[in-house]
Length: 532
Image (cartoon, rainbow, N blue to C red; front, side, top):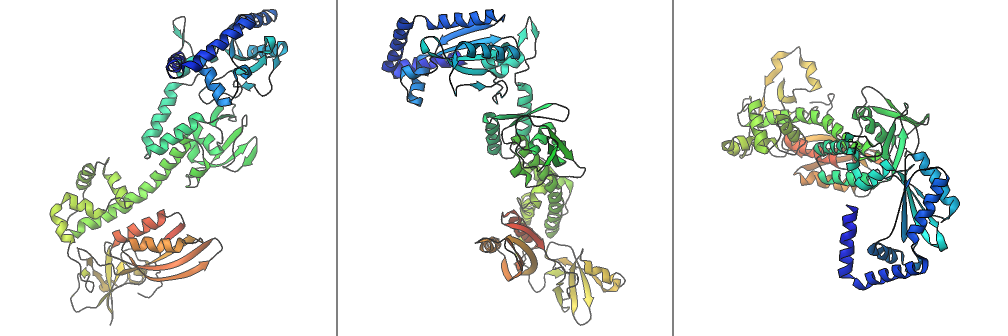
C-alpha cells in the first residue's frame, strides 16, 4: 500500500499546497544541478564496496517524495538544506551476518552521524519489521539514510503479514521473519469470543500492536515474544493458558523473582506451577498482555460462575414456590431463551450474581402470577403451618429470612422458633423429633423488617463508611445497628445489622457491597451459640 499512499499524498499536496510542492521540486533541481546525479553516484560507490569485499547484494537509491520532505521540514522545523535523509538507499543481502558486514563497510567508507543508528534486526518492531537503519555523511557532506536487510526481511517490510504466504518457484516457502497471520487472527478471535467487554478487548489489542517487544527464552531455548513491560505471568500465559492459571512463582535467569517483575530482552524464564493453583483477582493488575488479562478474567468468571449457578438455582426455586409453581429444567430453558441467553446455567448464574431477579423470571413465564406477589405479608404472621394462637419468632442464631428453607422448634412457654434448615443449632434437637414443626414462609411481598447481622472489613479511608451506608440505604434496607469490632491503621472491621425483606433482597445487598472497591470482605454473621 506504500506506493498508493505516496501517490495519493502527492496528488493531495499538489492541490492543497502547490506553492510548497513546487518549492521542494525547485530545490531538488537546484541540488541536482550543483551536485550532479547524487543517487547514481552513491549507489555506484556502495556497489563498489560490496564487490571489493566479495559480497553480492542489491542496492536501491531514491530521493524522498516532495510531501515526505515537506512534512519533515514542518515537524522538525528544519530548512531543506538541514534535512538529513533527503536521499535514501536500501541494501538487500542474503543473510543476517552479511547485513552486519555491510554495516561495517558503510561506516568505514563514510562517517556515521551520531544518534541516527537503529538496529531493528536484533530488536524488531512489534509488526515484525526488521532492518538496520543508519545515516552517514556521503559525497560532498550530504547526509543519506541507508537501510540494510535480508530478502526475507524486505518481503515483510513490503508486504506485511502477506509475506507469510510467499511463493518461490511455484512452491510455498516459509518466511521466518513474517508474523503468521492465521495464528494472529486465531488468537484475536479466541480472545474476542471470550471477552465480554469489546472496548476493553480493542484497547488491549492496540496496546500490544504498538508496544515495543522483548524476547525471552524458555528453559529449552524457545523464544517467546512479549510486549515491553510484560511479566512472568504474561510469559506463562503466552506458553499456554493452563500453565498461566497454575503459576505459583517464576525464576528469571535462575533466580526466583516476584510475579510482578518486568522482563527484559534476552532473559531466560522458568515458570513454576502447582496443582490446584487458581488465578487471583490481583493478577489482572500484574499482567500486561491482552491474552493474559482475558484468560485470568475467564478463569475467575468460571470459578464464580459455579457458585452463582448454585445460588441462582436456590433463589429461583424460592421464587417459583412463592407462586405455587415448581422449578423445572424446561421452565429454565424457556426463560433463558426469552432473555436471549445461551442456556439455563447462564440464566441461573445471572440470577445468582443479582443481574436478573428471580421474581422477574417467574413473572415473565407466568404473567398471571404477578398479582400474587402484590399483597404484603402480615409481619406478625409471616409463616404457614402454625395455629393462630401459638407465638412465633425467628431464631437469633441463624436469622432466617423469607425465601430460605426453615423448620420450627417448639419451646415450652415460648412458642415456636423458626431456624434455617442448615442452622448448626438444630443438631441439639436431633433426638427430639416431637419438637420439630414443618414451616413455610407465606408467598407475596414481605416487609423489610427481618434483621440480619453482617461483618464487614472496609478500607480506613475518608468517606468509605458513609458510602457503604448509602449503598445499603439505596437498596431499601434500614441499618438498625452499627458498631466497630476492630480498628487498624489501614482497615476497619465493623458489625452491621440491617433489615431486609427476603433472601433475594439480602443477596442483592451482599453482592453490591462485595463489588465495592473499598470493601475487602462481607460475611453474614451466624452464631450457633447465640440464644434462639
